[in-house]
Length: 540
View 1 (cartoon, rainbow, N blue to C red):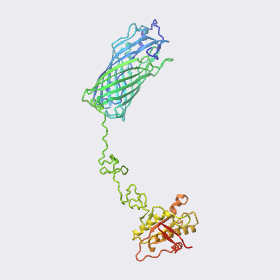
View 2 (view 1 turned 120 degrees about the vertical axis):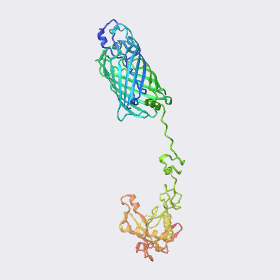
View 3 (view 1 turned 90 degrees about the horizontal axis):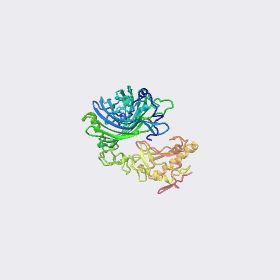
View 4 (view 1 turned 30 degrees about the vertical axis):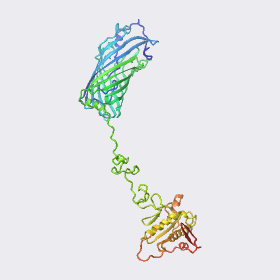
C-alpha cells in the first residue's frame, strides 16, 4: 500500500495483549531531530561552532505522515496506524563560546497526532495528542587542526554529544522513558564557491524496547548533507539531507530496521538575522518508523551585529576574484613571469628585450657564440672559425678523403675562414696546425697520416695568402685522444685538425720544427689551388 518494506505484523484485531507489557514497549518514534545553528543542514550538522558569544534561537515545525504504521501479515494492507500522523514543534537555542564550542537545547512539543484505536496493542482509545517530547541538550567541539573560520573554505571536523532527558510522554510514543546519549563526529568541506558537503556519524544510546516483533535500542546513526548556493548574493541556497539509523541488535529472524529519510529544501539567509528553511521528503520504506511523507519549515534567528550575523553576511558575498595580473609593458608576459616588467620583450625571453651582443642579427638567447659575430656561411650565430684562448676553433672538422691527405671541398669554407681570421689578426705570429687520428691502424701509420693531413691544411693556408713563417704543421697520430676509441662517436672526435696559436716571441721567428712528413707535403710545381678548390699533388 504505502510502503512495500514496512514491518509485517501478524495482528488479529480481536486479540488483546496485556496493557502493562504493551506500554513498556513504547518508545520515541520521532526520527526527525533538527539542529539549531543557522548553517546546520536541518538534521545534518556542519562542523563550525557558532561564533564566540553569538546566540541563535529558532523553531522547527514538521509534519509526518504514517510515522508508525503496522501492516497485516501476508498482505500490504495497513492493519493499524499506531501513529498515523504527527505535527511537532521543536523550540531551540544555541550559544557559541570561544569559536570552539557550541552548546544548545531543544524542547520538542507534539502539537497534534492521530492514530487508530490502539486496543489491539493494549490501550483502549487513541494516541494522546499535544504532549511534550524528551528535552535534548547538545554540544559541539571543534577538533584542533580542523577548526574552520566562518569565512574560510576547506575541511572541518568536530565532536558532538547529545543528552536526552525523559521529559516526554512515553505512552504517546514521544519519549524513551529514560536518559539517552548521542555521541558523534561531524566532518565537512566548504568550497570557495560556497558549496558545503557534510558527513555525520555516531551512536544513539537508548533503552532496549521490543515492539511489534522488533527490538529497539542502541543504534548507529548516519547523515549526509549538502548545501548549494542558488543566488548567493541574496542568501538563497538549496539543501539536501539523507539521515537515519540502524539498531545495533535485533531479534532472531527479525528484519533489520533502517529508518532513513531523504529531505530536500530551500533556505534564505535574510539580512535581518532570520534564516528561513522549507522543504520535504520521505522515508525509504526500510523501517516501520520511516514516514511516507515529511514536510518541514523553520526559522532561526541570530541577533544583528553579532559575530555570527557578520559571518552569515560574509557568506552571502562571493569571494572577490583575484585582480588580473598587471602587464605594464604590454608584452603579454604577466606577473612574476616577466623578468623585465618595465620593458616589453618576447615571451621566449621572459618578457625582456632580446639582445645581440655581437651584432650578427642572431639574438643572444639563440646565439651559440654570443660574443663572436657569425660569418656569412656560419650558423646558429657562430662563425665557421673564431679565436678562443690559444686556439682558433672551427665549427666543423676538416674532412679528408678516406686514408688520404686530400681535403674534401666541403671543408674549403671552413679553412677559408681560418685564413681570414689569421689575416685579420696580425698579432698572431704563428699557428701550429695539428693533425690527430683515431686508433684503428698502427702507430706508425697514424702518425704518418696525421702529419700529412696537417701539412695539407698548412698548404691550403699558405695558398690562401698566409705568410710561410706564420704557419707550421705537426702530426700526433693517436697520442692525444679527446675521447675513448671504443665507440664511433669517440673515434670521430679523435679524428681532427686543431689550430693552436703559438706564444709570441721577441725578434725574428725561429723556423718551424722539422717534420719530415710536412716537408714531403710542401707545395711542388705540380700542386695548384683553384678558386674554391685545392688539388693536392704530394711528391713521392
